Length: 225
Image (cartoon, rainbow, N blue to C red; front, side, top):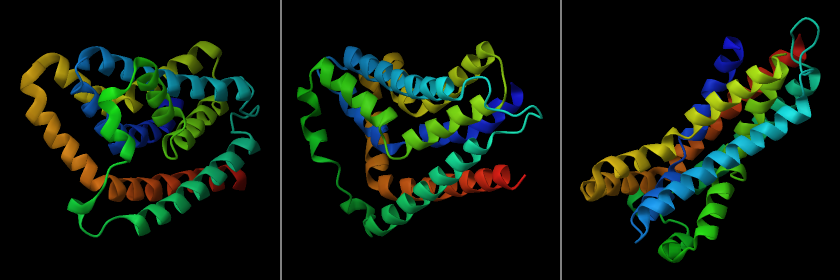
């Protein structure tokens, strides 16, 4: 299990470093029902990652590793494909980044986030976690890594839980600050929001490149042995 956890730690950190969802939950916490909406968003985020990871565990089953504990070929091919995908996204994101961070613009839907119903907030969290261009490939790769480790089901579930917890730290940190500090957290969260909004494109580009190269390397290593 320890080896499987080690394989997914970097992927989980890549999911946790998600500027746009961090901005989203900070804006949600500033709504009139900030505490409830923030908890709902965090729940949806965790649910999205857990569900996508669980689907990969079901697909891979406990036979994702060979008799010699070597990942199956399909795992290597999947990681290779995801690595290429993330690298291409990184190149696109880098070209699209604003030259002046102060000119960065947030998605238009964020301006209406204070009018979102609980259903929309839950749906937003699911989309940003399980359907995000960065987070979905990383979660799929993590699920494949866990499945390919040849672990019994309880240990697979435990490893996935560790992945989800670490991958949720970026979203849970603003929520924890808000719950502990209340109104005093506004200035701190405001600074976090401004930084994340200004550097979203650059951060994503770097993460796409780094994590894409990691998955490329993992895929080539599996396929070459």
